[in-house]
Length: 354
Image (tube, rainbow, N blue to C red; front, side, top):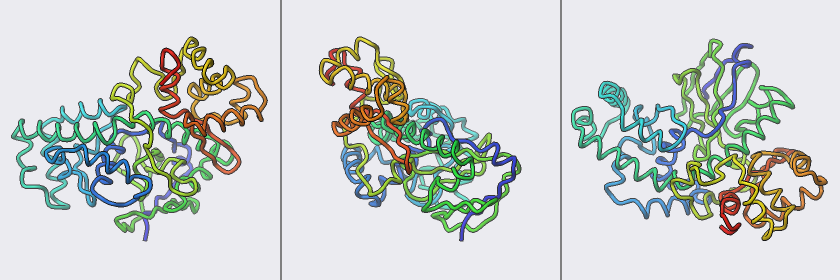
């Protein structure tokens, strides 16, 4: 029993990896996890912290984001680059789309009694959006920088898979527990038990890395401009499960790459590196700075960029990793280094202190 997606040559040519995490997917899957007790090791501490911070009225949104079943489309079908942009778009949903979305959901599952009044009750809609914003502010926004970092490291892993084996190798390794490539068909084990055949008709697929979609794949065949398949980032497929989001959460501004900091994939200024060098040593500071500026770089690339031997780059990376300033993701014989939020905070601090 599986969803079988049939690929043509055109589909393979147009299949690509998303260039970053999707706030909508991260928020909706995070909402599901808050209502379950699964993945206790990876998400237990995050779930406890988030639920402890949520007042009962802030949980209103769970009525349209159940742990099982459909998530109402106007909350889940939004393309946005950041959590803030996502929330703003949801608040601005036209009344016609709101009504159609609720009617579509009601055909598949019961809705809360109050949900039917949303299109005609602006105050009720505002309460729902406030609930969503509070939930996002505790569950996702403080961790957005780390989510971006994990997606950046995953992109480096997937790029090497495509470079070494093409799209078919990428599809074969994208989610081995749930997705199997048997050319020309991609078989996906769906949580719903869906058994169907789908043809992409030359559209290809967008492969969307996710931090919160750690279990069953999420497939949106109606997405534009092409269908989307969500898969867990590489870090979540490496060995034993480890807790996520264990460091100090970033503020909302930091979490969305505010103008005052490095953000995911932006390097600190040279004066900041000089300040960090007085604490870490100048070569190690340069290694940290380079990883922040080139998320997902391999050890060999790191050595070339910094101008040191590969063995020295590996040694410095190990020290930074043990200090919690970087993460290293491995795919067979290749590595991908990415700065952690703590490492970025060190680079951003004017005096070189987090």
